[in-house]
Amino acid sequence: MQAPTRPLALIVLAAGAGTRMNSDLPKPLHPLGQAPLLAHALAAAAPLDPARVVVVTGHSAAAVEAVLAEIAPEAVAIRQTEQLGTGHAVLQAAEALEGFDGDAVVLYADTPFIAPETMAAMRQARQGHDVVFLGFDAADPGRYGRLIMDGDTLVKIVEFKEANAAERAVTFCNSGLVCGDAATMMSLLGKLENDNSAGEYYLTDLAELARAAGHSVTAVRCDEAETLGINSRAELAAAEVQFQALRRAALIEDGVTMQAPDSVHLALDTVIGRDAVIEPYVVFGPGVTVETGATIRAFSHLEGCHVSAGAVVGPYARLRPGAEIGNDAKIGNFVEVKQADIGDGAKVNHLSYVGDASVGERANLGAGTVTCNYDGVMKHRTEIGAEAFIGSDTMLVAPVKVGDRAMTGSGSVITQDVPDGALALGRAKQINKAGLAIKLMDRLRAIKAGKSKG
Image 1 (spheres, rainbow, N blue to C red):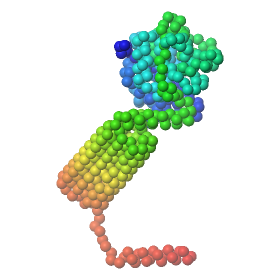
Image 2: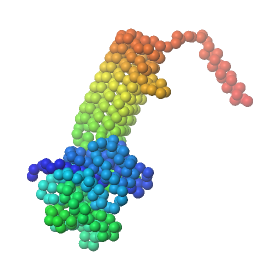
Image 3: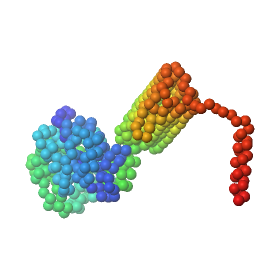
Image 4: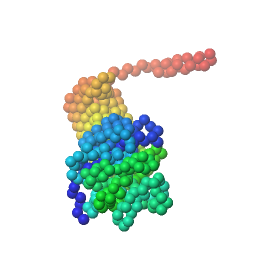
């Protein structure tokens, strides 16, 4: 069967209140893998290259739309001012899809584990059927809607509340996802009625409407784990466990070494190259890429950064947004890097802060080096040249430049540019007072003894 060639529109339902979350934060914005649930739905469909993306918002619409503008600026937000059921929600996208000649697929912001391959299978099934629903074989069908099949024909979908005893015995359940010709779906949804116990317009009624109109309707199967919906804090916590397990397994399969996988926490967009080594208790925030052969040592935290091939980070290192670590560079224990480029082969091994800076190739920053980048109002930049050597406990007061192969003496406060190859010393002259340490300590001990007697 040929691959689908029709354009695809994505309709994401993100209008729910999420009352069981007991939160002021809209449910679509609750974080999973350090990204909002809504981002997971969009990421699942991204491999299908949708031509249009429509997100239906409702409760806390302004907050959801603000985040949507950041993570998917190409998406169109449509508000469902009254929550009258899933069918009514999908119908809100009709105006945004007016004139669109292609398929539409409906998915949900609170169902984050639908695999791209599953959505591709739905599209493939569209080659032989007009409307395709997604179902799963439930271990415990509970209150899920049931898919009533006759061969490969989906006869109808019955909500649990409306099902009779025989229908409730069916274990093939509805995930909520559906795919079909966009114009046909919108036309049929316009005929929905709400004569049911909930008084809502059910998207599930689309199956019977389509068959009554002479359309071919079927359902494809996916693993039940993909259909996990999130409606409470407990379910969100369980989803985080599932997300982390899936991502770790995928990275290990791709050739990443994890010494203690259960202790590593990943984000939705974490990218790690083959033969990278991730030691225990590493946390990846959003926006991290680690290249082939790099090592992230234990207890490090990375966010918004790029670690190049062969680099070593940690242990106990923190890479903040804008950190660019070059090939074979070394970022050691208790080092923090922010908005800084660390050149190939450079070393920042101990107890240092490098922010708003550039560090040249093979430069070496001694323990306790600090780029003093903030004057209380504005940030300023420090530039350190190639093969420069920064002595331990050097304070680089930005804006300042240290040239190629230049040096600073340990304990220096550098406030002026250092030319290439020069040695800069910026510390007070040492004075030794003979015997004064003993006299001072004796005096302090006598004062302490007097206070204890009093």
